[in-house]
Length: 257
Image 1 (cartoon, rainbow, N blue to C red):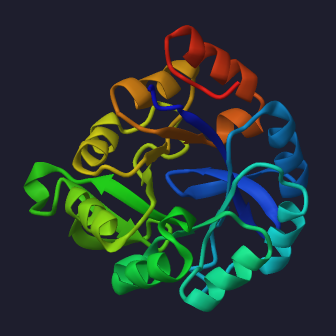
Image 2: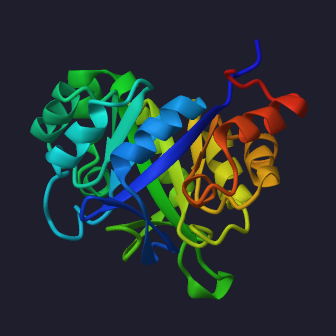
Image 3: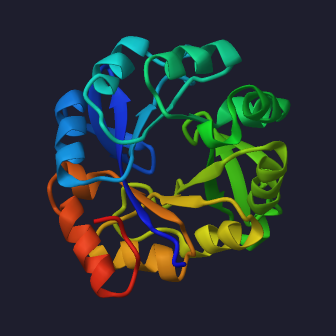
């Protein structure tokens, strides 16, 4: 049976508003998160991601009051990330009705946190987000390198090896974002996406760079992603969820209708 590809709009939230930037910088206001969440549920999104993008930089947990408002309105699976650093943080979010949590910097700092979370809450509740960048050959750094703290801090870690380790430790899926392509609308980093998707057996969500319908198709066919996450194209109404699903379906991709 063909894998059903998921379409996931992403709410990057700062100061209680949905924002969108380019390469994790120059953020501009997009819309109200509750209004956005309700609209995406109506349009037929398969899941919704909510990322409190400044939580780690500001050394704080996810703003639960923002999540609560959205959780009360969402009728589709709801992923939340940003500043999650303990099992207490995770429990608080799941208690609000969140379906999955996404951990990133905390997982890199303490890989055992992945194992502990998967054991306590179940693999299906755990998404590990991996942010990556490409380095030039002469840099002596890994070609594909993991970055943390909203892309501000390089780690020196090779990205595909980290993805394999994340799977071994118990992650249910990987949310993979290329810092280089994020917000550029020039397409996903297909090399990065495919390298990870072929190295692991858990689903990989492609993120960072969707600008047109072809990019979604390429992420699935060339990048081997199980889901496509996008922000700008949906927030600014350049492409609708039904349009994206129709486009993929017409090209033989299995989507939920």
